[in-house]
Image: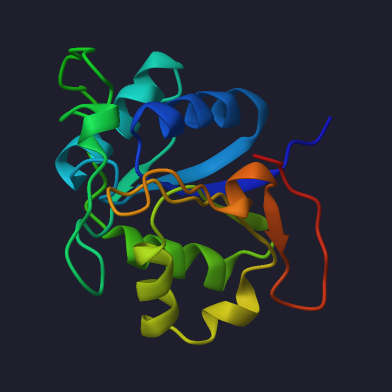
Length: 182
């Protein structure tokens, strides 16, 4: 059975950690790009590397992207995910190192050179937006992007975006390809 090939852009707190484990077990993960979100990039990139070790898939490269949003100040969810992103779980520093290439450059290189990879974005879209700004042709090259989103910020604590209730799919070009439903 052929598994769907994906790149995951995420901010591994508790939720994305579970999503990473499931995707690694069920799909062909070409790479993981961490972004600051639920907690800072220091911890999200650590958590992504930890998941590759936990699942025995240290062959999957992990890249660090951006820590801060493009506009405004970062709003962390440490009150939900804890300072390190995994609640009260104290994990060891992974042996696996981050790749030296910036996560945005990895996204650009991957999608400009391959046509069988979908993008699964389950964190803030800072890395995706920066990649599109840096390489406008990228919009034509990503066959499919699957986005999970929602907002539970201090200002909107009781609101949850409709996107979190129903996963949304977007094919940016004319071709439609099957991907994973998050």
